[in-house]
Image 1 (tube, rainbow, N blue to C red):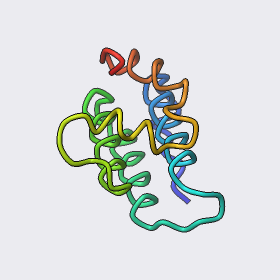
Image 2 (image 1 turned 90 degrees about the horizontal axis):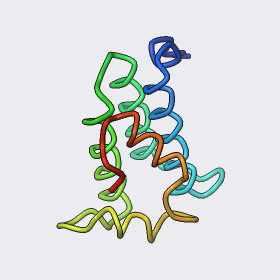
Image 3 (image 1 turned 60 degrees about the vertical axis):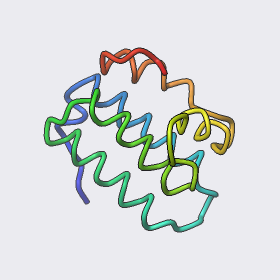
Image 4 (image 1 turned 120 degrees about the vertical axis):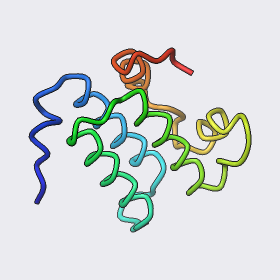
Length: 105
């Protein structure tokens, strides 16, 4: 099991990792295996653990998730993603964007 200690030692990375987890929870039904989305989560967490910047990770993760869910084509994927997520974007999105230095989109 990979604990990714580097994420836990940095508040911004911790917030981003939690946001990624919440997105996956909203995108996938309970006890439903979606290997592509699990792999996206693993890659996102690895990127953060290796020192990757949240400003790059957040939009990439959202776009990739939108692609997997079939709503990632063209401009406006962010609003289409919010429509297909159970309950829309998590409230943690605002804090994740702030910690990454992004304006909440």
